Amino acid sequence: MPRMAILLLLASLTATASAERPNVILVMADDQGYGDIKAHGHPFIRTPNMDKLYGESVRFTDFHVAPMCTPTRAQLLTGVDAMKSGATAVCQGRSMIRREIPTLANYFGDAGYKTILSGKWHLGDSYSHRPQDRGFQEVLSFRAWGLPSLASHWANSFINEEEPSDSYHDPVLAHNGEDKRYKGYVTDIFFDHAIEQMDACKKAGEPFFLYLPTPTPHTPNIAPREKLPYYERIKKERKVDLRSDYYGMIENIDDNLGRLEGFLAKRGLKENTILLYLSDNGTQCSRAAAIHNAGMRGKKTEVWEGGHRVPLFVRWPAGELKHGTDAKELTQAQDICPTLLNLCGIKPDDLYTQSGHDLTPLLKGRAWPHANRTLFVQYRTGGTAWNYAVAMQGPWRLVSGKGLYNIAEDPGQKRDVRTEYPERFQNMTSAYDAWFKDARREFLKTRYIGLGHPESPSTVLYASDWEGSYCDNPAGLKASRGKGRWHVDVIRAGRYRIELARWPFESGKSLTEGVNPNGNKPADGARPIAKGSLSIGDQKVEMDAEKGDRFLSFEVDLAAGRQVLKTMFRSADGKELCSANYVRVTRF
View 1 (cartoon, rainbow, N blue to C red):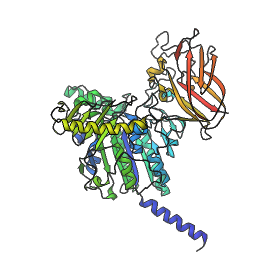
View 2: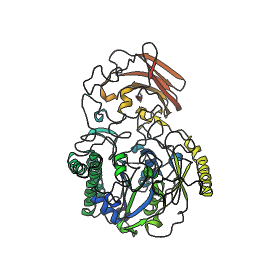
View 3: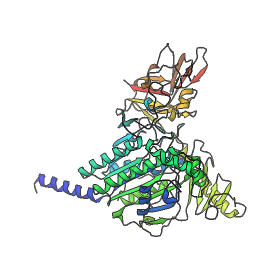
View 4: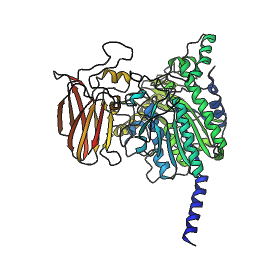
């Protein structure tokens, strides 16, 4: 056979194989509670597209995540417990997955899929931890927890007095690492990007893995303006205390889900696309929890049921799933990774030891051998026993190692029954102790930020990723009193420029300036920075700050290898003020 004919045959076989492989769309809302969906019994929220998807899906009614953003995202993308991946908190050095653990994007990319992130990442913002470093080929995102966060572009900050922003309209987003202004409402922008990318894949005959984690309904509570009147009317008519903007953000997600569904149907993609919809933790809104929380106690950040049980809808028309039914078994975020790999026929050579189990039997209405397993949720920075944790076994919940609750009989977790069921209490305590001993070893392994790699010769380090004080939001940036350090891995020895800044480099603000968004005098957050120091490895250098300096610049020779990088700003009399919130490291 002529070579050209062989090539054409191979191309045809590749196109056929690609067409047969299912696409995957993983939509995850940020801070939407289990009860914040009409199909889950909410009295007035408008979610017609979520309700329709509910009717067309396998619904997991006892599905659990972490009570906070980053650990859920790490569990979802790796299939590994957050304690074992190291990503247990939203900042303070705990927002990054260890590099040796692959993500779903790595697995799908290696299998020939186009991997797309359109939305929130929150698993590290410096080289070797960004989404483009973790398997995503096409990325539209933003840094840290949200648009006004410390690591986000200065144009998105609502403490930016030069260019005031509400953060969710006309934001600056990072497209494949390059910051760019986009017009419109932030969630609409991410769905636009996702649809554009899927359309390109359809035209190219390329299967895709799309991760679409919305930034809403997370704070700041800013909804499209047209969504507010309905909820304001409900507030008056029903005399109920509610946040119109919170519900408006969810309704906007629902609108975009409808747009997504319309696109899939129009382009002939619906039948062979696996679509999942879930949330990353319980509701962030206390008022929403008080109105309807599906009978559960607790909300975001809490290890009560309402903090970590969330919706999960799964639909794949061509996959012979048991659509329109409930899967009532106890399941969690770590199960998604092995499930998707199995459904798509992906068998990675480098599959990391999974904490989760494949849910395919439940999706197809068959018996599942893991129904009686014990699950664990633990998050935050402490990493000590039961800080903060819950063990789950069937309907039983052992909260913080102290209270035992049976949610089948007591869904609101009002009655501690540990004295009535001492054997159950001891059994679950022992199971947690064994799991924790293993998980703790992994938790203690350090995660490093890479410096000087040819793919990223210049890297910015953010206070939101340092190990030290909590410093993750506009208030912390304005105050600038935090102190921390970064664990770094110098990939190439050589001469480096290291620049220390108190404000974002793009802000143009000097080290000593404050902010004045309300016209108050003197400016809020002015700091008397007169000196700065840098310590990395066994080197320590200092420098005086001149009036108007926006950052201090040091040049040092660095040996290759793992080191600790620390900084400090001081007053004229030598008093320690804060570490540099931003450090830019560039190899010459």
